[in-house]
Image (cartoon, rainbow, N blue to C red):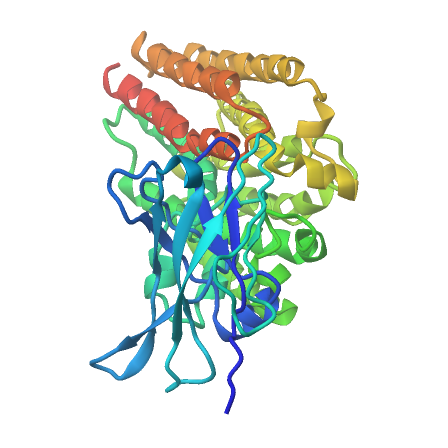
Amino acid sequence: MTYQPLVSGLVLTKAKSMNKFAFSSSATRKKAFSFWPNRPLTLQSSSSSSSLGRFHSLSQPFLATYRWHQTTRRYKPFRIISISYKHAHQARNTFNVREWRYYGTQGTKPDHKEKSIHAKDDTNSSYNTTTSSSYNNNNSNIKINSSETSDPAVLGWVDTHLPESFKPYARLARIDKPIGTWLLLWPCYWSTALASASQQAYIPDPYLLGLFGVGAVVMRGAGCTINDLWDRDIDQQVARTKTRPLAGGDVTVPQAIAFLAAQLSIGLGVLVSLPHMEYCFLWGAASLPLVALYPLTKRFFTWPQLFLGITMNWGAWMGWAATYGSMDYSVLPFLYGSGVTWTLVYDTIYAHQDKHDDAKLGLCSTALAFGKDDDEQKKVLHGFAALTWLQWMAVGYNASDFLAFPYYQLGVTTAYAHLVWQIQTADFNDPHSVMARFRSNSTLGAIIFGAITVGGALQ
């Protein structure tokens, strides 16, 4: 009996000006989906002296590789591919790739082969390849694609430890990419710390911090599910998002809706567990229309990142509401407004990954609205960064009774310097550069939280 490879071919991608490579199935991507759910691969250089170094885990549907496990007598996923970098002048862009192919069904021995990839390096990240060995099937050519994702999974345990049936839902909720959870959580923590400082408490209420932590994980996941339900057709046409569970077919629409109902139920449980439950419920429920409508704004609103800021920073109201059952409108509007303008900065930087796809699809983005010239666009972002700092300073001025000078002011100025660094050093044409700056905002949020906490404790 002749077996055909379930995954035929690889895609080797190289980021411009960076020694990063990744492998994924090529022409048979959908067929690979049906046999093997997305699994991360850790790529590691076979030589410690190699300039490639160690690769990070990636969340794309990369080549499913198998090896024979002697103890269980079954084929196990094999996640390491060794790449040897040849330093010889005539072959400086040549890599040896050891590829496992799984033929047929369980019990059939995989076919192990070695290929040599010759990559032509040029400034446009366009690569031509030839293979040093031939295969008996027609789909075994290795292709090179310059659109490597800049948004890999961060938490590898999602793919290595969760049951197979849970993995698509974890990816749908972006559990493997926690930066969004942090960006939703920090305004909640700022508000809670501010309220605790007004009570002359040395540390914010741990109970509230725990509830907001759970709520941020659940509601960020719900927001991602809603976003992917609205955008599943668009996501299929965008390089960075086309492998998301709904766009890739790993999760159906009815399954996603049922999952969303479960997420919202847990979120409701967190909301009714907050002190001053009725007051918090009204404020929390008021954010739901924003969460539901945000994905649509990119279709008609020139600045969808502004709407995102209004949505993502709703927690700036919630921490104080849970502490007092009321609002202090002399302080909180500035705290909330600082979060909105902060979001405008970091999400505009983030949006540069998709600006070409957005323009082609007719979608709106501040990465497009702020102009084509990078220097001019950075001036706009510096303006919003300065406005963010001024609002942080206004919080300190209006809360001077319980935030010690100059500790709080030094902290928020440090955060402002971090924001300036992001803008000034971001390469808007390098997806890896903008993603690194975007993810660094978890640190910025922690700086503000620390500034409020220390300022309150030392007053």
